[in-house]
Image 1: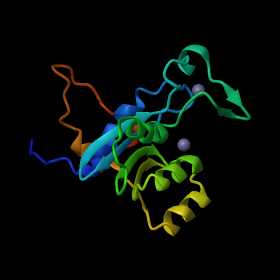
Image 2: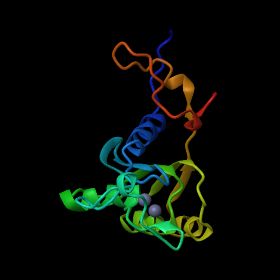
Image 3: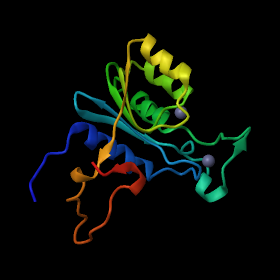
Image 4: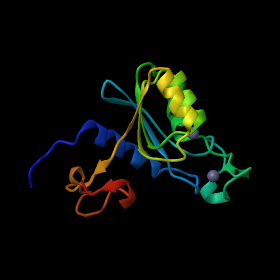
Length: 169
Ligand SMILES: [Zn+2]
Ligand SMILES: [Zn+2]
């Protein structure tokens, strides 16, 4: 099998997909990876405040159609930077789902200049306007099977990524 190096976009987005598998909310599994100078500086998934119960154990805490228990993946990744004093200025973020308006505002205010997302998810038109207005970029990534065909976990031949996320290209 010929060896083809995995492109950065594929690599970082796959990292976000992996992170999404740590989600503790049963409604949606989201992962986010913050990258600066081609290095991962933080990651997050949607889940409860540390110390609180998990939706997957207790059920979601629903208010007006939304689970209010969880912190979104993007927010968790940004807060990880805040907690440990890691600058986010001019960074990029890879998220498995198009970010909600609140997360988009935080991403932009944190100085993150490029938002890569995997799947469309209630793409907010004001969020899209904001991204343009502040001079940031948005870019949809398509994960290609060919880069993950040789993935092996020890002896087991497992499919790493949820099928939905992979295109045939
Ligand atoms: Zn929940
Ligand atoms: Zn959000």
